[in-house]
Image 1 (cartoon, one colour):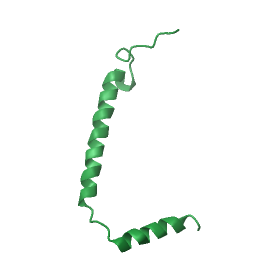
Image 2 (image 1 turned 45 degrees about the horizontal axis):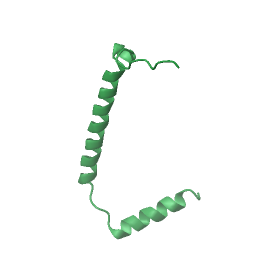
Image 3 (image 1 turned 120 degrees about the vertical axis):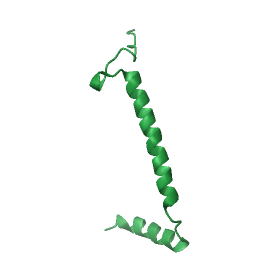
Length: 64
């Protein structure tokens, strides 16, 4: 069987190692998750009527 190449030696875009790229992606994902949660906290809670209207709207949207 062929050995798997070491991710620390493989170079990706910009000459960065795959381990470095992986760490940057993890940090970016965590930052996006935190930003998304903060955005949702600022939104006002929907009333029962708004939830029902959204449900019916989304359900009938595809029947065009």
